[in-house]
Length: 154
Image (cartoon, rainbow, N blue to C red; front, side, top):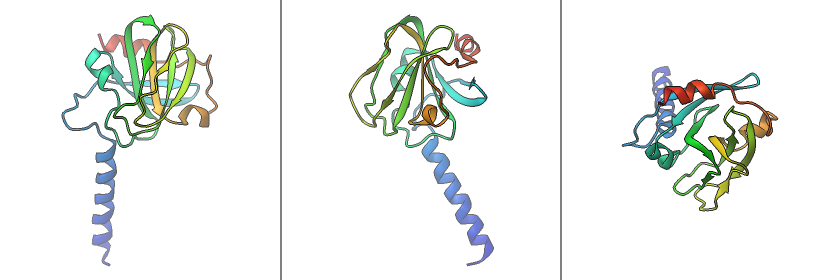
């Protein structure tokens, strides 16, 4: 096969992979925040309105590496999440006002099981399942960049 065909095939494969990671058609693009935990960087879409929080990562087939979604709520309270219409396995980290992880839970795709914060929280961060565990990140650690993300959403 000529080199040109290989290049076209590679371009097509890259385009297909990118399309799977993009929000579904009709999805309003939310703001993006750069967060850090220790020396790990996270690119997080910001869900700071009721519509964006309700939509979440529904319909996504994949996420780019170290990408997730930061949910911002107006007031700290116990928040619960489920995975209806979300085909990705995710881990959710519940965060207090300062961005400290209070608890985490693995969530199975397309499940209606609820996963609730154990204490009142203002933020939640969803990442590919296992992202936190692979990096040894535990409750009590601080996610930095939360305050600028919250301010940008206002």
